[in-house]
Length: 85
Image (cartoon, rainbow, N blue to C red; front, side, top):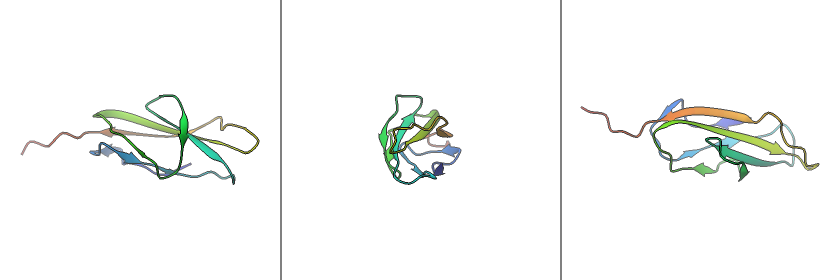
């Protein structure tokens, strides 16, 4: 499960995610914007991100080699434009 990520509307070009599993001794794979899954750790930073909608998915692998069939997903929108005042 994802325990911390960016808010639904964010102005950061780089984001950090924290996640955990209900099982002990697992490894994680992450996917940003539907890219291929790559090994990752809770607390990793992802970016730089362009403006627009984004999604992050994380799945766990247990010691027996089983892969989580339903990854945790977080969606948000990045807007780095400076407001017109």
